[in-house]
Amino acid sequence: MNVAMRIDIITVIPQLIEGFLNESIIGRAQKRELAEIHLHNLRDYAVRKDRRIDDYPFGGFAGMVMQCEPIDRCISALTAQRHYDEIIFTTPDGQQFDQPMANELSLCENIIILCGHYKGIDYRIREHLITKEVSIGDYVLTGGELAAAVMTDAIVRVIPGVIGDEQSALSDSFQDNLLAAPVYTRPADYRGWKVPEILLSGHEAKIKEWEIQQSLERTQRLRPDLLEKGKR
Ligand code: SAM
Image (cartoon, rainbow, N blue to C red; front, side, top):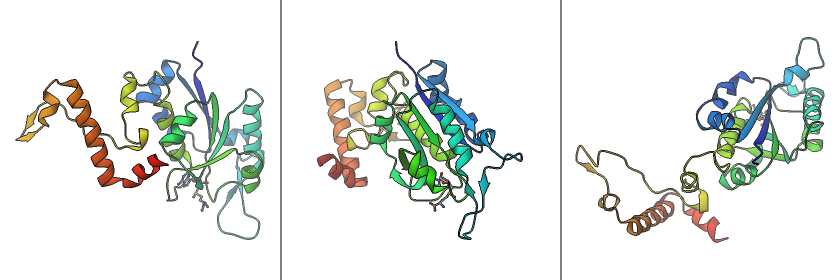
């Protein structure tokens, strides 16, 4: 029996991603019990009566920092119930998220994704509890929620069975370090803009050959760095 992959997301603003997680492919994956996604409001683990989880940074720096204790309490409550393969912190100085990482994480049974806010989290949490630090790009977001949503989407869609036609996820860009070939749908002629003849030929082998050649040509032109990566 297939056990659903479980993703626990810890955030101070769960409502930022609640709707997103219940829609489209991620929503359906959960209904079909292929993935389980749980949102945890960090304020439920606050030690202060006003439910605040941040404080001023030592050293007099600007901004606020998320405190150790609420994060530790939340992570400890989760790890007391099950083993987690990774405890991930979303952070701009982390390892760059990409398709190979999404594929790898989709093989995990349970992962935690911790979203930072303000100036970030007390560094001791990163040193002692976090097993992987991940960035979704070289820019700074207000919080880790969008990063967690991006990662969850990319991970869940490659879980076997989530996308009806599995080939469809495997032929997306970045699988095999290649960009995807262009796609077309009806009508075959729109305002004189024609679909490549070969796609209407019904000749499976030639269509496959065209797809590979298009994929290589687009990668060479738009992302030659991916081809270099593939050689390594
Ligand atoms: N002071 C931090 C720095 O310079 O690295 C940035 C803090 S940012 C305003 C608040 C939170 O948003 C971060 O702790 C992180 O969780 C999240 N975040 C921001 N940019 C991100 C990115 N590119 N990838 C992943 N998470 C990001």
